Length: 57
Image (cartoon, rainbow, N blue to C red; front, side, top):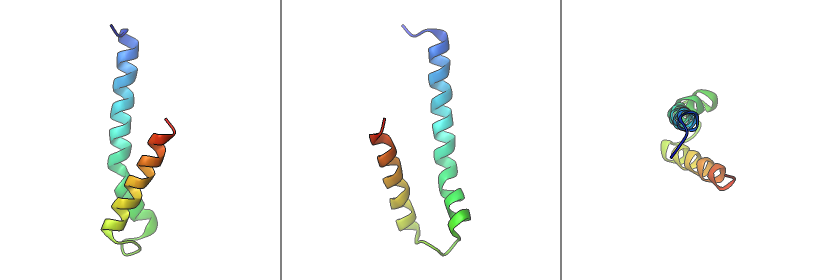
């Protein structure tokens, strides 16, 4: 079984990942501007970045 501290750390990482993922699109729009990129292109770029990040893990 998991140790209590390892379980809590995993839970913290899961919540942190979810929070950062939720903030990704609004912050990208803020940085790039409202009309800089189409919404579908923005989603594609965000998923591409997430995929590249996951390959390094």
